[in-house]
Image 1 (cartoon, rainbow, N blue to C red):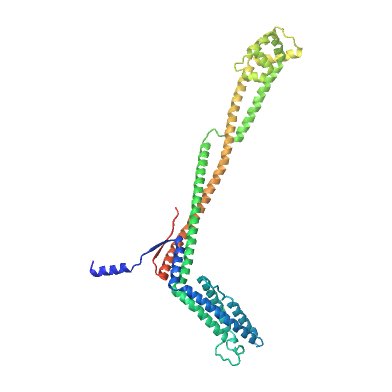
Image 2 (image 1 turned 180 degrees about the vertical axis):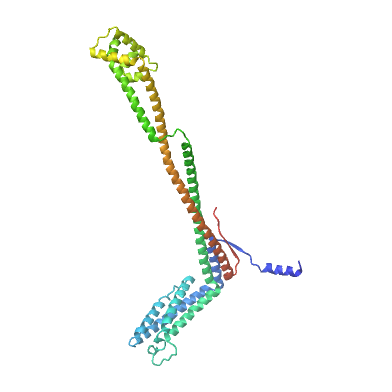
Length: 426
């Protein structure tokens, strides 16, 4: 590197200003400090106080003048055009009241409003004949080339501009513009943070919904793969049929033992300690159900033998009924009834279990409905998150753009190299 290149590099580095780093939350405080510096360096407080006093003096003097002009205008043909202008001028002067120690912002706000009112008044005067036809508001010995009201207003506007120019030269106005820009940047950042928080919240809801959706999908897959699942209507129909057939078997059993009950009662007199006989006399259906070995057949064989021997004493009708029942059922038919009865009850238990199982399936069908709910919820949350992310992306770009513009504005207005830092929440 030549000595000339070194010298250029040295000068370049020497002229570079150090960069300040400011977070969004620090900008307003930083601007307040710069504002205080400007106020002190350019002696703005005394200037504002003096300006307020001048405006109040001008107000007092002009109010006196307005009283005279209004009095002189009443009988003039142009009164209807002139008096409203005087009245509007008086209303404008009401702005020019200040406390003993006026704040800068307070005086500048009055100056800004004064500018608007003066512009409108001057424009109205210049558009009317009163601009040139104004001699009727002068005293007889007075002469003027310019409308006296217009002259006073122009002089008041010049006084206003004097303070505005001093404020502009001090860069105080620039701080207000920067402050507004910084506040806009802060609102964008706050909105962006809010969007990100919403995205985070919805992502949590989405994860929970996806988890529930997965659970329901797994449960339904397992149940749909179970071969035991039958149509509930078919199962209910079969269960009803089994119930009817079991009821028929029970009626057959009860009918049989009802027909031979007189025989059993007489036989009990011979064997009063026979527990099986006692049980069948008390509850033939339950006894038959619990009599796995059908020991009652042996008992019936003894009863039939006694019947054949003629040892029972029954009415002829009861005797015939008992004989018919014993010959038709107790030997082979009773065992068949027992087997059929047990088979029907076994099938009924299985059907009942399957019905209960299918009631669970109904519950799972409800879960399937809920699965559809979670499926729709996942889709809805996905769409909402996508929209929020899209908005967040746009806000992020706007934030970066405003960030750069704010830094450039501070640099061009105040000559300070500032890097605005944007806080990122995890």
